[in-house]
Image 1 (cartoon, each protein chain N blue to C red):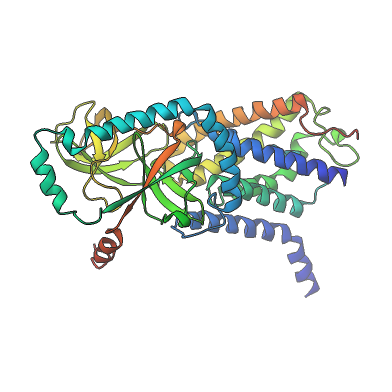
Image 2 (tube, helix red, strand yellow):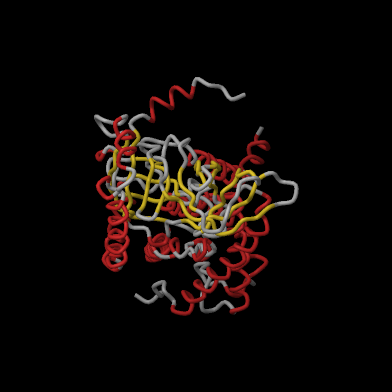
Length: 171
Length: 277
């Protein structure tokens, strides 16, 4: 129950930050990082795959409503939620899972955390920009934009990790 | 039979995944149509109110620059009043007589409550909707030039297709030579749009004014769009690629006017009878 509450708070905070702060940066229409993906990345590993897909869809769709993007975020979020279980097996060794199946922010090695996060972030950003543009001629621009914004999202998420924005397990 | 069912059950994740992605694509396609009211975008009451709250704080912090730009717009408009023009008075009166009675365009001022510039397709949310007489396909103009076209309206809010959007193709002209082309945005810089379809035999210079053309059924004629920033000529092409520095700074947009055209429906229905094929 506490876990659900914790996730809800994280969901709300990330959504507010995304919509009111990060959606508005837009330096030369280049910066458009999606930090809310952190929520999908940090859902407990014990989450069933179908629940993961549904939660990712709802999260993406909530961002879509505020950004007038139709279903772009829903699409990209569902995509990485589908990939996540496969990628976790490759990127994070079993010893780091706790009893709830939480990905323990502080216990994962820094390098592993970066690899796990950045790959999924890149797929999310790239899929979104590509679907949004739907022009293969823009591929170079889209790739560049994806790399830059993956880096920005990653740095922000690392900051979340450092400050441990999410409530800790203590009551 | 049971084996088949078990097999299908094993695939349920794939089915769910495909179903959700299909739904997402349907939602993306739907976003490209004009709606009178739609819940699934920022013109809905909840998102609109939330945006208004945050926008109020931003207004307070940027009141000085908002005042400056509104004052500048005021003086520009004052200069256009007939009593401030010496020579053209007679012509002006004749032009005006055709529109005697009620004016063709209606203006409603509105506040920008949300605005993005980082997407390929950007939208703006305004705090006026059906209750203020706003309808889809009205023009939106800011103190420094055109802003966009109204897309969806709800009771108290409306969403606007910004010029910074793939779906915004605005008929424009070079004021000096009266040559018309189209303004499109290519997605890399929110200050610069492209003016296309200008033939290379036309003389263009850096700094020339680009304004809305008489062909538009949405925008009034001669509304400022921007000024020519760069001119490129591609080998073998019969038209220029002109970079236009947009007058509107989308990052600082706060007050706009929504312009209704009383003759829009009439012209639309007339032109719909033509087929272009």
